[in-house]
Length: 285
Image (cartoon, rainbow, N blue to C red; front, side, top):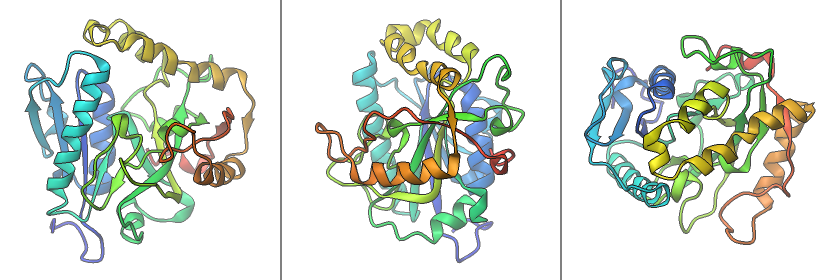
């Protein structure tokens, strides 16, 4: 058990795999390092040509042979690999969190718990999901995103997104589907007061950089990036609704509603709901 962790708190690790994404990885290390301890972070770089940035010092970093040359093949291989790493870590840890580097699992400040304290109180048999929030950029009032400031002091609007209600927290070895969107062969439980906040398409400059990234383009990411960037359009054209009311309703809908092609993924009747993040979240991430 890590020395800094009180005996009553479960042993929790976080894993991610990145390629050319230092911007969000910096925030990932800062946030999860503060919540779980940097020694419990496991970062796998997709490609031995990658450079480990200085801010990863104190974490467990590994350079891995590049997985796949196309987005579909690479994504399946990446999650298969991370599932195996999580299974190994579960021999030592009670829980493993798996996310992309631009995704952060946050406890509602109204709960009054750290992430480790909150998860330690949960009875998780296989996996647990946080409610997905996909952040956009409200133009022109929200400026370029900076990693040296709290993200939630810079971004206030998000779409409640079923794509980001992911079973990212696992207590037993299992196989994640592509993008952590499901656990194969198992249902999911959406926790109360827990959110997965996705910032990958919350800044026009970041989207442009990803679109112009030749490495991503060669793997077929262009269409995916263009599709996901519509979140910015949604937060600029749809009304911002009450956060507490609509996140409560979304949990109910996503718990019971399923798409016909995947019973173990959440659905929400194609509703496009944008919410304004309450002030209480401002400094937590």
